[in-house]
Length: 469
Image (cartoon, rainbow, N blue to C red; front, side):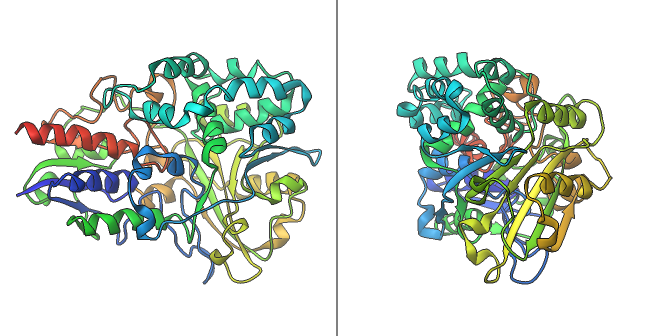
């Protein structure tokens, strides 16, 4: 009998398996698709030689993750590549605000009226960032805070809605960039604790940047799987699990799945019926004949580029997708241009690029025209560079990854109390009604992103139970 079986080979499932195997527990992972990866994959989606990331591409949370930083993933091929700028947010007038490694450079891009405000907001946390991120991402109750005073100060700044924090800024440049940071998790700007979302992304950039994995996001998953194999763990792909009886006997079962799938497979009935899924995503991967012709020079040097003319436009797009049940006319876009830092991802002189916007859950329309109209506003002539495109709306995203219910790449709405208390209000979110079944997906704290911390935290809950039996 195995000690632990993990269902799902995304970053969280692989991290949980690694943490258990490191502590001497016999562990096996079962994945429905033919390769590991979940939200961290790399594939040729458009043309031969163009290597795209179907979901995540830039990794501010991964490079800062306490779980990943404790693992020897560099020995298994993971290399971080840093663009000159982590992120840029261009404006219609051809200028841009930036999120740079330097706080001073970032503050200067906001203009003199907000430079000091931004520095006072972020600088107190940076000297204690490693401790803060460990405390923030380990909650709840998986580890006692190492610096409760700094964590409390962060909570005072971050728990109110982002709109409150944005009022500190006098000009639109800073407000717009910060609104875009919050929108990365598809959260309404006026929601509880959304200020913390923006702060975490900003602090992560200043601490270690927003890098890309050399060769693509698949390198993260492959490094985790390689380390797991060397620890004696097993990885089984092309193995769809429909019920617990499909799995070998084990003392514990750990699910890197949506709560919906977990309840169905483990026979938990209506245990997660109250869990809410968020808006969907419409994503386009491009093969380009040259770099994106951004009007703003800063955007040409950034790995990630946010697209939204101002905070009002961003807020309107988020409300349309999450509350009004319609696709926005001017979608807020997150775009990533991997070949700025990693030219090996495309043939010589060519580029890969992706953009996504938010749409209602399960939406079946085509957002391509709206996306490309937005891109043309900030990069005139973009369409002329397109060699091929691969589009994926909510149905296609859900078909690629069963965790993306309704096209929700966060595996659950990041709003209300669910931003912190996932998948239900409890101090033990990784436990389920079945004593031998646990959940470790992005539906658990600290939530979405490629950082492995749900898997790390869930593994602690599992090994504590295994040591008691």
